Length: 355
Ligand SMILES: NC(=O)c1ccc[n+]([C@@H]2O[C@H](COP(=O)([O-])OP(=O)(O)OC[C@H]3O[C@@H](n4cnc5c(N)ncnc54)[C@H](O)[C@@H]3O)[C@@H](O)[C@H]2O)c1
Image (tube, rainbow, N blue to C red):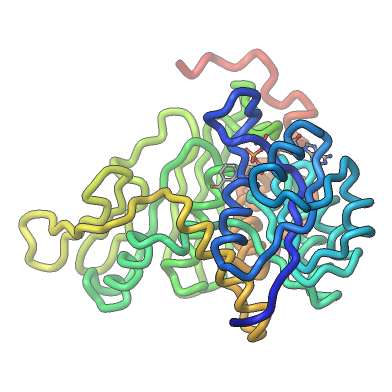
């Protein structure tokens, strides 16, 4: 039995199926992960909704302190680890406050932040203060993705050439797929990004304006190319596709989740998995991993070192759209070019309806 940890949550939410839910209630999945380790006590919660906070504490930890103001909670409770489960515009101020308050670890929901500057500042502050900072790109812990990476490493499709992904938007969902691009490609750094986005349709996800369509081409330093198709009508026939010199591997939302065509194959080989591309178990595993890393000093699988890489690709895609050209990394512009262009009325209401 290792150390015991005092865990706190900022932003309780309500499970998505419950009345009054404003989102997914991700904090419920986080606390499940802390309690599942058998090594954590829910010490305190902070939420501007007293009702959400009290319902949360009644469910998971009767003695936990309930606060409206997260600054007060951090100062009074001095938790070891804090989960930040609010909407993206609140991540940076909350993560920075937790780091400033001297906690040992912060586990924050994705996407990192609405701008590249905020994302960079959180990571830099954690490094400077020696605080372990992680972001919940939990798919790294699910069986189909691990199986795909193992097959790739075993040479099932030969040398990796291209990684493709498709999803509803570049930042809220795309952050997961771009993170998986790095996962498949052995965390190889990205060198440049060429991208385009279109913002004619007004869309917000968790309060954050997102593009209606987007395309990102990212070139990694080992020559592998990543292609992310985001938004309206983007369908590549699977969730992720890995194209190698001698075959193709696909990940599908429906079973069989992992399909492969290697050299000489005339049909797809399918691989049965117990898990799919979603699942709360991945959040439990991420939390168990970050707690053991607090003890052994290893880098957590969900570290901010990794999160900033995929986040940089998102903002470089936006910057490429603004610049109408390739963006070589590191990305220096601290804003979100997409949000800046939106505020300048770049797309307005004049564009043709994509439908
Ligand atoms: N990892 C994933 O697969 C996944 C899935 C869904 C959502 N998310 C992310 O999780 C994050 C949270 O989304 P959610 O659906 O859990 O939200 P939610 O709406 O369910 O809960 C947010 C909670 O934050 C509280 N809150 C708002 N302002 C606050 C403040 N100033 N101080 C304290 N509490 C405050 C609200 O009252 C609410 O209880 C988002 O960034 C979202 O992108 C991640």
